[in-house]
Image (cartoon, rainbow, N blue to C red; front, side, top):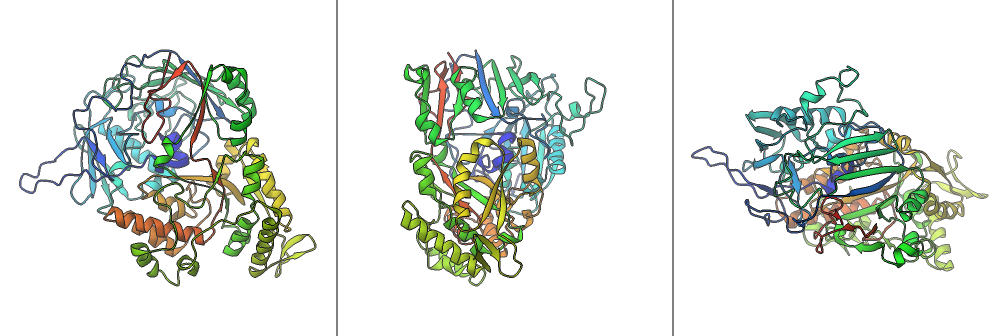
Length: 609
């Protein structure tokens, strides 16, 4: 995943560094390594030939027709403005490339080698001499410095994510060094290898109309990159076509062997997901990831599926190392959501069991952790190191973390529904609200409890409507507001909403990104992923323990404590997830028999018959 995904979850790309050799005190020479890792040493040696999950003989042919929902208005991946086009990661390269067969391991792409001193106060990348831009000019340290400085200057999200990176400097003819403001942060040497490297000389030139290019602004001028594809054509906001470059400098690198096998990859955008699905059925789109459990259960019975022209797979791979929290997210910047009892009451009004039965045909699981599905999810009551951490925060965190394991309310029959709604009303009462007639109102101000749930596509409405109906039973007025994708992105960046339908994905190595999701410093930082507006000193302390943990045991204990405290504060109303990637594709598409352990490699390692 590149920056297109980085905007919605860069943490899934974050890998960190432990495979680091100390500087020789006698010779003061750099000891270079071909990989950066954190959880365990890299599996592949310096002279590896290819990733083990690729087909090195895959033919390079055919067209892959993909789809998007909404629209796009920019080819610039380094600004917090507008919607970047899907597929931009095909155009640019990064310093490192993550292995999908290992957790938190990255190998050199633009960089042929890396050096990290023993205290991890910096990282130096040595660029490959053969790395070239599409116009034939070499990729240089100046390009890396320019790209990094532009990213921090023009993206609040990236500025926060890389806040501990104080400088990017050219330190040799082909060397660039990133310096950090804290030592022994295991993650920093790797995450600086993930941002897009763009061509300084191209941005310092002029476009076809003679206007100076400006990297601080969105643009629909096709981006020149160093990656395997180029933008061949597009219709603004509607379609985009990428073509494989025969002259791609890195096509024979071990990290690229058996990859980038489609001659053409195109995207067509649809305003409605049902129309998008029909385009897939008709063969106008080749591949679909299905996010609707009800559609997966009931609408794949057409002829092309029955006769094998379309294949279906439900794959757990991506979730073996990814924790997920999908939830309704109340905006704590709004006064009506500041009391945790109100937020807890909103959870008691959410009937997951009814939704799962009637809309998803039992295909969903209720999420009960910010690291759901992984070993990082808090379980039972705190013990051992986790308990020690929480004891140090007594009086600053909810007392219930010591006596109650977090559990979502359970519905499923009329009696349970009534009991949970009564509990919701009681919690509102304790927080200073009461039912008057058929409205929940504030006892001091008379203000009714009402809010808007902001969505970015009509297909989500059917999932939200049952919740709206349930809230109405206890006098809470919730309204759905669906806007186009550009307006939605802008409103979310500026925290202009009452409640959204949000999702966070977590790697097995949580680190600096936690500050951007739950830390006080990001609560009012435009473009951050702290959607709820959490600003809690105890949580800040827990995040610090996560990022500075010296051992895996310490890290897991700190993450468990963080998870437990986030849940106890009821910052979100947890929703659901399936725990597997459900895909359908026309049979002309092929993939290796053994997919990566922690991914599905799409579209990179797939090919066409």
